[in-house]
Length: 181
Image (tube, rainbow, N blue to C red):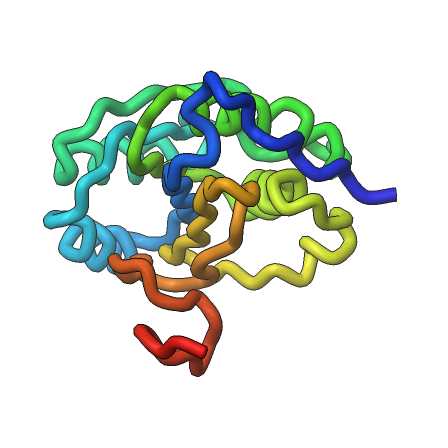
């Protein structure tokens, strides 16, 4: 059985007001340089990452991206990569609540630099997908998944992109902006 969908936002919270959650998978140094150039003119409210673990560089990426965006950077142990044989539901149970609280905190745009396993588990939990289906989610190194907290709930707006496009146009591939039915 897949994870339950997130409950609708309370009328007294900041949920459902268009907050964007960008989940970025770090890559190599070239990917970082490209991301820094792309993010240089992007407004980010806060950047989250896991603590530095061995050779994984989520914290390094997040620190540099926070600096280029002039945003605060918080290191959260709940966003650490999966431990050996840790199941997806366990990863989601510890990582998703932190990001869900951030969505309700009134930030306009949140960037979380996380490992592939944390990214997939959080997307699955956010969208109410089974973890088996989320395993097919492709997110290349240095790319971003954009979730937006709309009044109808969390919506996948972009996936596996270098930088989400600004604007309210359609998120569907091949869709046309500004076309009304």
